Image (cartoon, rainbow, N blue to C red; front, side):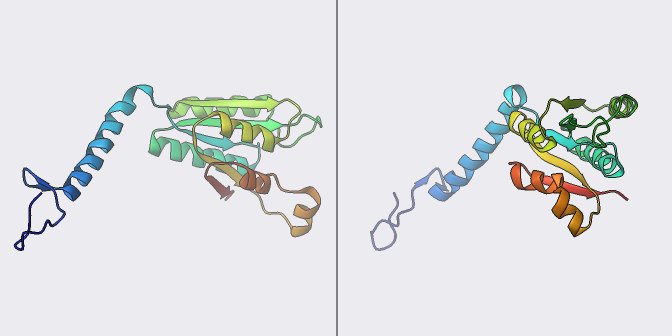
Length: 175
């Protein structure tokens, strides 16, 4: 430890011209570089999760998911979920729509996957389970315009997702 003019210790430790505060900064830089170098082997690649329904707002969410996954270099997971209670469930993608989405994902060149769940659970529960089981960096949902009475009577899947998941959520509107 160096002393100041009066002979009292200044409290600054110096070694080879670096102060303790410089060591703190250098240590942080070293840790950051060390962390980045070691990420290449064992890290989990983050995933963009898209909650998809075969409607204009679902298509908008899918397009935004492709755009963001491409720009970030992340994996893309597209999920279509329904409880399966009704045969004419508008949220359930039919075979033609599933094939169309899978072809679109294949054409992007991304690490992308489409999953469809019809297991008796709500769409919200299926999305929550996916968020909990994957390293999700962002969940993208589509929004449609509904009246206040419509929201009150039927509830809102988007609202339930926004309030229940533990990751950032991007809500997009259909154009």
